[in-house]
Length: 194
Image: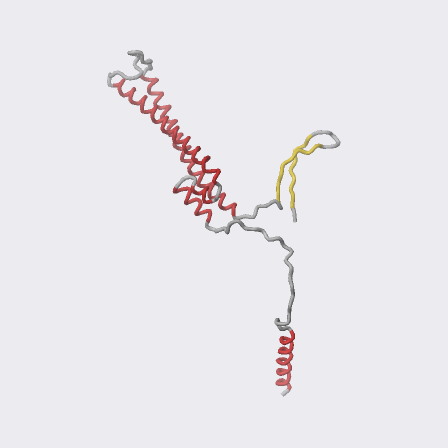
């Protein structure tokens, strides 16, 4: 019987407490002291993969996806320069290769010294075509490297956009004048603002 009375007492006390703290009568005004920061864009954790894919499909599209439009002309200038040197070296290689093959067959070429043409020996023609071939191959490798680099840049930039970067944390190199020795010393300052 004592157990039953304690049980009823506990229930009655609990209901009385809950009745006292009803939220209908509770009016509390809370003022937010934290300044709201506008987020310009919601970030997707898959955005680095999307930026990489877009850059792989069309160079510069990943930079456009990251809203870094000023990087697109740099991407096209780098790739265009690489393609220009590939084409130029390939044309010169073909020119010297054709002249060398014509010389081996005993036919006139552009470097035989006849009719006002400059004279180049067969070994010079062979060396020139080898040089242009190696330059062409190097230009192809550099162009492929620039293509891969712009894909990596788009991915890294998309990854870094997900992090909060503001003026509350800054790093700035500066020159500090030493008052005692009157010499300038290079240093760095870290600033934390709360």
